[in-house]
Image 1 (cartoon, rainbow, N blue to C red):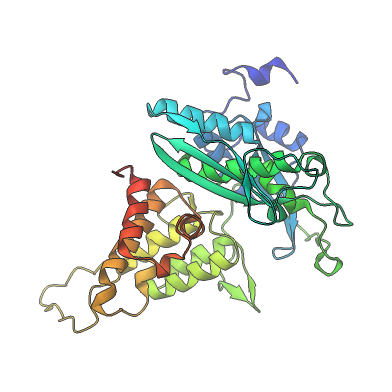
Image 2 (cartoon, rainbow, N blue to C red):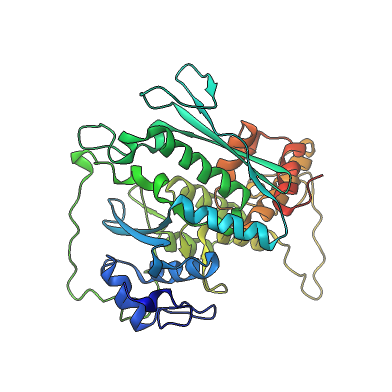
Length: 385
């Protein structure tokens, strides 16, 4: 690798105001294994992520890894880094904010549910737990071995998962905890340790060959093109994230946007970056929440029109959760707290709010009370007591 790659002023250096990859950068990215199956939106999102995280793809600090997706019938590219890259981002963010960053002892759990501060058995642990302390606040996460282990065709652990299962499980737990502690800085990028299981052999009936389309364009040479508009789902199969964004842009009420959000969540697309009419690039989950809030805002009354009286149904919904039919007044406080929580999560870049909330409190957001919802909102906004 040439010294040019390590020089801040070299031709490969990524500028903060850069909007597209330069020809020199494109050439090196292609040599690193990013082929013409990559979508223009994936390239644009990767550039944005490199700028936001300040990780250098040409120094192998962050990668764009392609894996075949049977749902989309093509190779889908996902950015990922190592746990060391996560640590660099976390320590830099804490230092710039003038905050202290620390760890509690890592814990491992055996199959009986007993936790230990050192793992000595040859057999892999059932789970690992890591707690990050940021500015006095604790962020704990648990990673189960069975959910992350990388396996061979026969089902046996492969690579480092076979040699160091306790270390690899702990790395996954650390990545989860760091992402909770630094949701904005680490949103949209995952560690290689977490994504190793994505390379596990698929059952024979899930393997597909990609069909080459005549006249298929080169994403490296052509500017990003909008995806064809279409419904959010066809024959029970979810469409790409851009289709969900298009459907939300055409929706007429927040209830419709909430349904789209549920479909996108089920398809695992909330963290995908989409292009919108009024926002150049935005993660799908954040856009859907913002779109639902826009539709929930009361429209300004025209001259001569008398405001209608609201009867029985309560306040106008302002969030994805409030977009359903109005609840009795006893749930108004929880609805308002959920609205504030989802707004805070969108502002902080936390795309997996529902998962993180249930992991922290042991119940889904829909079943939580207003005090719990407000407590997490305070954590995300930095206003915790």
